[in-house]
View: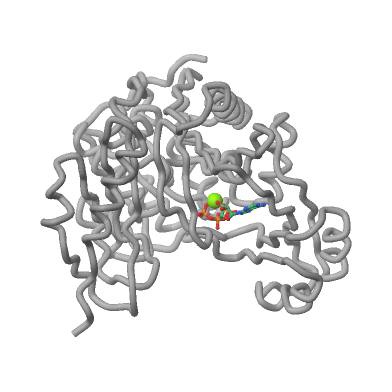
Length: 389
Ligand code: ATP
Ligand code: MG
């Protein structure tokens, strides 16, 4: 495959979505001299303060997306919940990378499961269910506990339920707020040894450059900690990397693909979820890798050669989550958190804080990932949010 002709700075890049991922993509692109436009429903989105222009509009607003397209040379997205017709309309005017197919495959968990299996990669045993009776049948066939997931629109553990006994099934449908007959994904809950993720970037010429595998910890469905390179056997890391590369190729994507994986007790790997974008579990690459995931994504979508993606040092990232009721965000304890020279702070510029909102992250480097994690955790523990006034 020939690499597309390069898009050179000071051309502008358009991003569908101006959250923290859009913000960090914009910062990397800015450093390289690109202009940046974002589409976001919120004029004060996290990316707003670091981009040239915010087009205010929802992710299904075709007119707004076309205004963005007209101002830029290439369009990318920072979230997979962008309406398919928006991407189609934009793609008629400008290249959209990673592309349309990566989006349709990953926005729907059922389509995603089918795609992963068709690519020869394992997922947890699953069924598509449309009635409470079918969930009962799935529970009998797959065993409890089950995870019942809404196929489209979930993130951070929202839109899914854990079913541990048949009694949980009675109101599960109602609790997920789904109309009767709407499809759901029922999937066996796996007792995993560890959660891993692999971030790979595929250039316009088809070259795939993987980052080192990360090991992740979730709490209540939300990512709280990542460390990389993951402390796992080298054959596990190699198999995880091969899965990322194979799926990126099968999707024919140009840009970043993240695969969230479960490492099972027997050493096998199954895919939990795919994201055709930079990922929270790759934030460590800003300080810990030779090229960050954000710079690498920009290089790929602009048709440039990819950077080296090796780890510079063992790294750990801990997310900085909100606490308490919604109020203006004022961070306390920054001085203490950064007293350790190994620690780096990233705040996303969100005006309001609330319970469990992703507000920022801290990354620490160390001589081992365990040491880096201790440092990052200690730094996060010194931070807090001012009470509302
Ligand atoms: P995120 O946006 O954080 O990726 P999400 O809403 O997309 O979350 P999932 O990735 O499906 O949801 O699930 C979130 C977490 O819940 C997983 O990382 C894992 O810890 C747990 N989980 C989900 N499905 C299963 C399963 N089948 N077996 C065991 N644990 C699971
Ligand atoms: Mg997930």
